[in-house]
Length: 302
Image 1 (tube, rainbow, N blue to C red):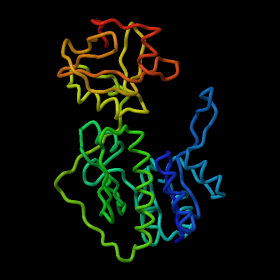
Image 2 (image 1 turned 135 degrees about the vertical axis):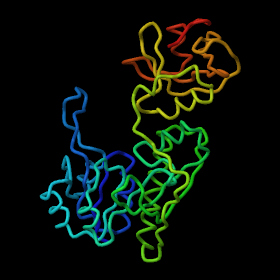
Image 3 (image 1 turned 120 degrees about the vertical axis):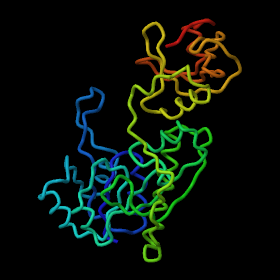
């Protein structure tokens, strides 16, 4: 097929690679514009998808919007059979949705209609969902409301958002390749009206650990915000990111350490911090941190 690929973050890269390796003609890639980054935070840095496309000699477009008639005409002129979308980050106007012969298909990281929206992986972990997955969806104007062509489930277990994102990226890529291969026999299924939930964008303030919640919920925070933005607490005015934690025995005042090994009381139960990162420092095991920066039992974390 003649494909326009639209994606931005690491999640979308496996799909682009899989489509090329499956023999499809990716005539153009659309990605978010380069953003300030690099070591100084000032150099314009292209997105992961942009970098992959350039490495493969594929033309990259990065408009700030697709609302103008000029941008829509450029898209139509590509003459695509289909557009494949994965975490692109821009709304597609109706003119863009209608341009490819077979429309636009999206790789969404949940089993729709649960967790429509921007942060389905993090929201699934925070909610304690036992399973999640990917959905191949025919796009329409509504937010992730289009009919579904294929789904694939996986268990969440104790995976972090980073681990689950990598897994679903690969599964979504292969599911999309299979869907395109059998497109003629796939029957689009309307999403059920029951079970709709929305995965709103993550606010950085949500990453502050809420020790008044149950230990299970606090541990989910750690996994949901790993690697970004990173669940954290503050001690003596310094921020510490918690990169890994286990459920632990014990009870006490929420936010108070129960021993000298960073076991912290929660609203119900406790967690033990396993891996941690001080502001501006490399990540380390909690035991290594405590050798140089002891945290005594009874210390209050905020």
